[in-house]
Image (cartoon, each protein chain N blue to C red):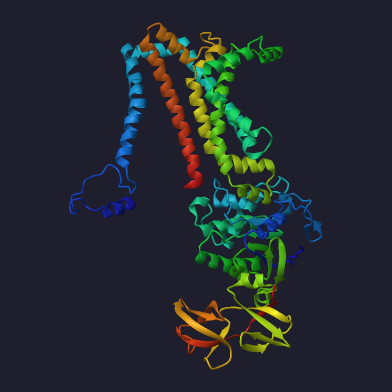
Length: 326
Length: 296
C-alpha cells in the first residue's frame, strides 16, 4: 500500500486490531523494519536512518515514561542525551522544559515523578517529552487508549489545538472511529494491512468505499435490495437509486438514525415496532423489517409520530449506501 | 507549629466516643490475619529469633573486656577483615557480571540459552564442599587455570584471590536471579521511547535500563554479600587458611569450637551478625529509597 501524509497534516490511521496500523506507525518511527517498500520524508530515505536520527516524536499508549526521573527530567531527556556539540546549555534546557510544561498545562508539576500523576497528566508529559526534540513528525500510538472516556474527550480537543499551534505533521493511530473522525484532517482506514480508504472525515463517513468501512465507522443496518432501471427496490418499497450505484442485486446500508418515519399507510419500508427504550438523549426503537430484527435510533426525548410497541410504521432511510451484493 | 495545632484540634476527644477496644492492627477485610500472623511469629521465633538470641547472650560469659579482647586479637580482626572485605569485593564484582549474564539470557535468543540458564543455578545446588574441591583443583598451581594464572604471576588458590573466586562463584546466581525477572518485565516501549528521543545504545542502557533495575540489582548484591559472609565449605579448600592472611571468620569459629572456646566462637559469631545486619540494613534503606522514587 502507499500512503502519504501532507505537511502539517493531522492524519489518523484507523482500523480494527490486527489491521497493521501500529506496525505502520512503528515502521515510520524506525522501531520496525519493513520486509519491502520504502519510507521517505521530504525527499530523504527514512529507512536508512536509525531510530535516533529520524527525530520523530513518538507517544505510546502506556505513556512509556521513565519512572525514575521527574517530569522535568523526562521532558528534558531528548535534549540531555544529545552529543556535547548539539546539546543546548543547561539554562536553555530549563527554559525549554518550562515552555513545554506550560504548553501541556502542567506548570508546577516539574518535580513530580510519573507515579504521582494521573493518566491524563502522564500522557501530557509524554507528549511534552516528544515535542522537546522539535520532532519533524509526531507519531501517536493510541495515545488515549488507557484513559477513561471523559479525560479522553478533553485530551482529544486539546491535542487538536496543540497540533494547530505547534504545526507538526502528526500521524495518529486509533481503533476508535469517533476519535479519528473528530480529530483528523484525513482518515486512512486500514484492514488486514491494506489501505481501504483515505479521505476527510466527512467524506469517508458519508461515502464509505466498502461495506467494511461503513460498518466500521458506525452502527449499520443492512437489507438486501435490487436495482433495476435506476430504481432501488427493497422489499415492497421502491425509490430512486443513488447515483453511481451498481445494477442488479445489492446490499443496502444505512445508519440507524438516518431514517424518516411515516404512518403505516404512507410510503416506505414496512416495519413492526417491537420495543422502545429511552437511552440518554436518544430513543432506541427495536423493530422487524422484512424478518430482520433491527435497531433504529431516534433523537430527542419524543418518539416519532405513530411509533409505539406493537404498532406498524413505515420507515425511509434518507441516505442509503448501496454496494453490489457479494 | 500552626499546622500541628490545627491537626490537634481535629483529633476527637476519646471520652465522648463509645469505649472502643483498642486494636493492635487495623481491621482488614482479608480473613486469617490471626492465624497467619501467629504462624509467622512462631516460625520466625523458633527458626530465627531464639537461636540468634542465644548467640547474642553467649559471649558475655567472657565479660565485656573478654569479648573486646577476643574481637581485637590480631587473628580474629584479620579474619573478620578478610571475610567482609572479600565478600564485598565478590558481591560488587558480581553486580556488573551478573547484570550482563541476566541481560544475555533475557534479551537474546541463541542455541543453548536454556541450558546456560540452568547452569546459573548450579552454585545454588552444588554442595559447597564439592564446589570448593572442584575450584581448588582447577585453580591450584598445578591446575589448568591456576597454571595459566601463575604464568602471568598471579597466585589464585591459597591466596585471598582464591577466596574471592569461591565467593564470586557462590554469589553469582543471587544476582542473576534477582535481576532476571525484572529485566524480563521491563517494558520495551520505555526503551523505544528513549531511542526515538535520540539516545544511543549506551545511553539507553545507562539512563533507562539500569536505573529501572537498580533496586533488584541491589537486592541481588545484598543477598550475594550475605551469602558470601557466611560461606564456609567452598572457601576452606581453596583459601589455604593461613592465619592473618587467608583465614575466614567462619573457619575461626569452627577452630574456637574445636578448642571448646564456645563463648569466644559466639563472640565472633555475634560480631559477624552485627556487621552483616548493619550492612544489609544499609543496603535495604538504599533499596527502599530507589524503589520509592519510581513508585511513590
